[in-house]
Length: 236
Image (tube, rainbow, N blue to C red; front, side, top):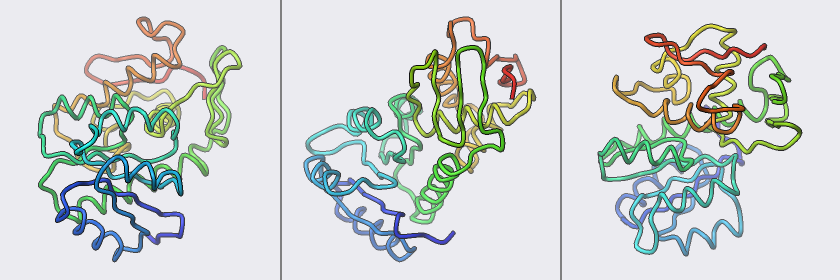
């Protein structure tokens, strides 16, 4: 993948050894990279330029990464967010995705893994922004999904979807009424293999339903098929 000048990464990590390693490796891979050791430094950098992807440590000296991700996602819907943590608890991964992170990497990790995740995320975000599925505008009742403009409205009001939520919606719409398993969705969302018991996609589907369904408890657009996965029932 060839990087452009727009591929700007901001690393927020208080471990100098890790931040130095990531900075060197990612910069050598063609990205523009800036490093911060805490939230205060990150805020100063964000004032100057928004990154295409934020690589965020979970435990910082002046803030918690989940709180940062939640706040940033409210104002930066199209910015990639990858959380780094030394905690291997699967619950933390789900919480991270709930607050708006796009991916989650557990320490220790290989630099090549981080590079692969960053490239996959940027590729997915650019696809969603510049094209998405071939179907450009999809209507389902009062819900209008414009994939060419990367917008969703409900009864004429904007629906704020994160990049991951928008991509999930696009994948489901593109499935042309074919059910997609949890593993199939995770592979398309992340471009990598996930653990067989990973429930992250269920969290994402639940978030998406809350935003687009008239009654999330009785979904009509995104159905769950026991043993098969999820199915989009609207017209595409």
